[in-house]
Image 1 (tube, rainbow, N blue to C red):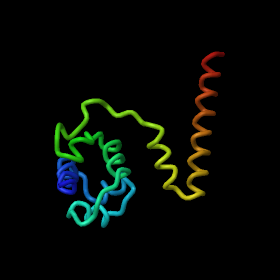
Image 2 (cartoon, rainbow, N blue to C red):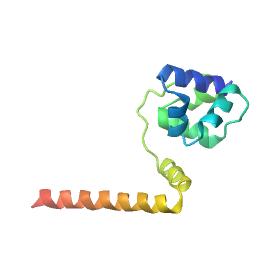
Image 3 (cartoon, one colour):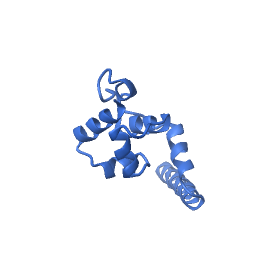
Length: 115
């Protein structure tokens, strides 16, 4: 059962329900219901667990293969977009301003190195 595998994953990593749920943007009570088998899991949650914890989706969904992916995960645009969509307008603006600031700092550092 998927909920049991999520609980096993959490246990193996030594992560509490609160910590785990926060990292995949769901409530602790929602995670508890998933682990008990009382709540289904959508593709978005599967994807977030896989990306956040480097978990093999095939193991997570079907219990087949290794728990963790052998390769280090890369950050994909769709993950960033998913996170962005979950933020309210004010936090979206803040995220954009921080990204612009980072790009500005990178450009200034590059320009300083060229001098």
